[in-house]
Image 1 (cartoon, rainbow, N blue to C red):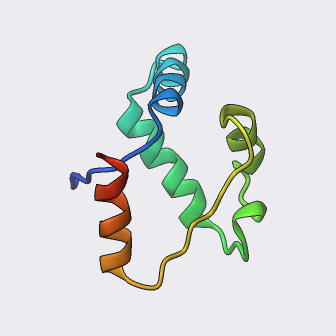
Image 2 (image 1 turned 90 degrees about the vertical axis):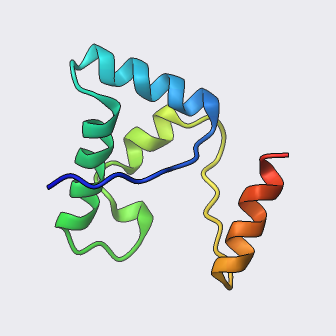
Length: 84
């Protein structure tokens, strides 16, 4: 059973991901699902341990920045602030 979610990404990254998905004859949704399945199928101790980390480095522009917040409210506030 499929469930819908809403994600927010950098526009340039989305365009590159769409191109990658198109070249591999897969939808962006299924590509995202595949990446999540890879992440959750192993017992990884950190993000750098993921088998897709090299691919992410190649696709991403600049250094990867992992943001952690202390609360859901802080994350929500940060998201809406970035949309202005």
